[in-house]
Image (tube, rainbow, N blue to C red):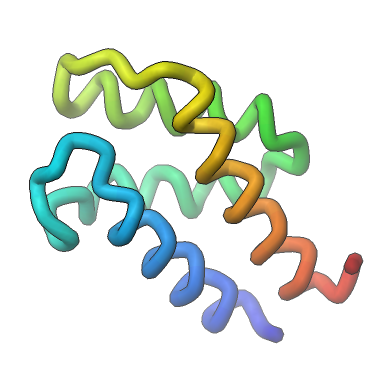
Length: 86
């Protein structure tokens, strides 16, 4: 899997996640920021903290870290699959 396909899968996961019930297309800026973080972070907890920071900054609504960890594990799995690490 190439980076483009990885990003498409990650975008789909993040759109479906919809933490604030704002609709699939409401998070374009946040998703772009998360994709940047996904490129450089390899640990689910680190990614979860960045996800929470990104969404909280945009919406001024706190997300429990457990919810962010759930999505971060899925995103890291997609990354590892794309990099053929699994």
